[in-house]
Image (cartoon, rainbow, N blue to C red; front, side):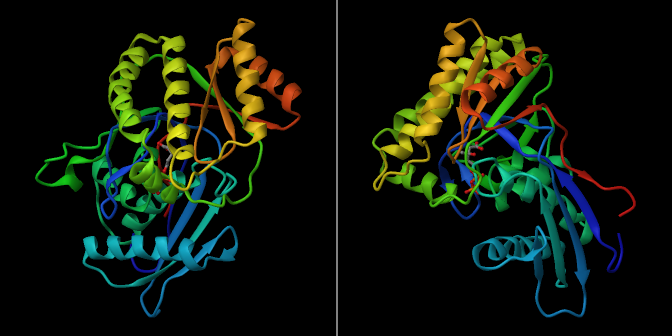
Length: 332
Ligand code: DP6
């Protein structure tokens, strides 16, 4: 990669089975606890970075429109970090194209910063190992650390007293699990949310009386989840994921002031999933920082689960499976 040839990368969103919720260090984006996710095979983000040696400022184009304010700021700050690490100073044009609805709790920031980390390191000629790339992506958005890898991925928080906290906090793929997990997403709302996940997470950690309990449970659930994935135990994976996600939502709903992402429609879907389970279908819910409900089930059951949810909600339903890690597009 030389001169002004663009570098292009593709990354996919991930869904956390044990959530990242709360930062110990805001600047370095270090979480309080480990989290664990599955990278999906839907909604990729494609990002191109082209250096502009004679330009005086960065240009950021998101889905065909010039990015402004906070969206632009986060990308320019990230480029500044990459330039600092590369010892370079050229400005760049960043073009990013999402296929996931932005800002609806479907992890567009995870695929976005994973793709940007890979494309920008290539453009600025930094050669990073996957763990280092994951640490870099983490600085853009925590969950992006996991989208660098495909399949099931664990993000290590790092020990609180680690001498170099940045180095200690990276994601890595889990090996050895055979579980064929699918995710059925019910798209209830795809507009921008009123409170960002970053703000909701910080408010929950600072003000929710339930946060310490949630954190302690999450630390235990990580080990339990790894064991269940190892054993291919879908029922335990599903039960832990559902409990963890609902616990996270209770921390936001008890924050001051509260953040309520769950709408009446979300509650209806959560109830429908419980009903389906009582009727013998093996399906469990999870939710992120938005109203959409995602349903975990075996790949073989996904068509039936999707059909039932479509009938019950009359909404768009998307079936996803495990997907690949971030890759550079050939020829760039
Ligand atoms: C609810 O990674 O978007 O999806 O690090 O502040 O950018 P920042 O947060 P972000 O938060 C994701 C939170 C979550 C849970 C998860 O993906 O683990």
